[in-house]
Length: 96
Image 1 (cartoon, rainbow, N blue to C red):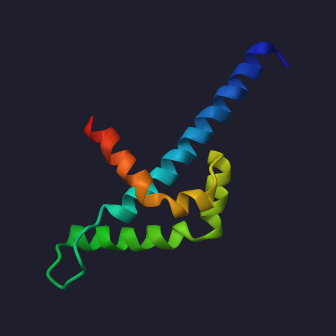
Image 2: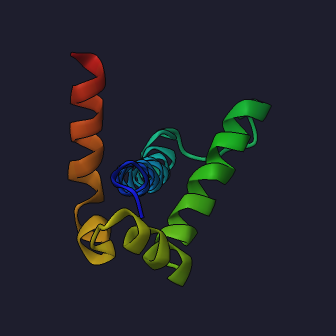
């Protein structure tokens, strides 16, 4: 294998980990992005947000989430236990 090929493979691996980390972050954002209580008066987009929140909460506790964390080189239990802190850091980062 040429040195160039090794470099490309390393970059692909790094890019894949970034992609899976972005998926994990999106799951956390989906969980915390819906603030209002569910009621019959919600707009269609609010109902969709509420559905996404519920799906994300369910997914966070699935075996598939564990696999995604493995791909991202993250500890799924750490993510589950610290999801609110992670969300707060995401929000602070976006504000800056």
